[in-house]
Length: 304
Image (cartoon, rainbow, N blue to C red):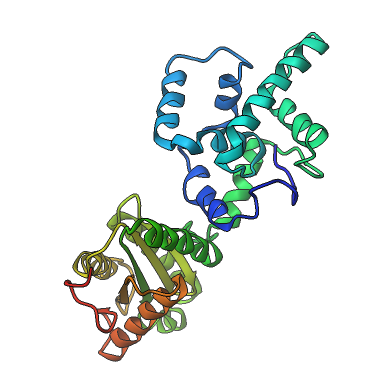
């Protein structure tokens, strides 16, 4: 069930919306079917209780927000989510008793949130598969499968807030394929598209699961590196990607990339300023002859 609900509490919080993109809309998120079983619509299968238990352990206070997100595809803050979930489960039991049949948790949620509390306005029913497809199309680049430009900014903002709030490290890489126009001019856009796809696949192979790869536009890419405080560590990732680009075969001239690296400092004013410093470093790499990694001005491995 997807909903259009400008009135639902908590949905205007951009950090929480980004959190949905970063974590809950991933392949390991709880499905509607699993949440439905947890709510009593059917008996839990072997292993499902363990999956739910582990999810609750990992997610902590956000667990009930996840349950509600699975059945509504909208965010409800942890401060209200547990009570809201309990109220919906009670409403489900009441409806089931009145109607003499099991009322599924999705139906009970829709009725309670739209007719009882008016927290959802003009809800629309869409299959879970269709919602997942829409979500993927809205946050991913259609060619490479990486996060797109607008999602890049959302995720960078989320990680920047975590950086400022909890003191965790954060670095950004900004990459540009050198002389990409020449490839298109000499070999055609089909070859250029193939290189972009291979570039994306190579980048994903060179980073951690927690890192975030984005197609920023054209032949530019961004890699967000959470929990990376050392410039040396960030440069090492950038260097792996630079070397990996040279292995993308089947093109003449060969492919190289220039990379700008910026590590967020305590005085960093915004995620955009971090990206701007990476852009300045990228310009330095281009000016110095391309096919190299440049660290943002004034940073060294002693920066903490």
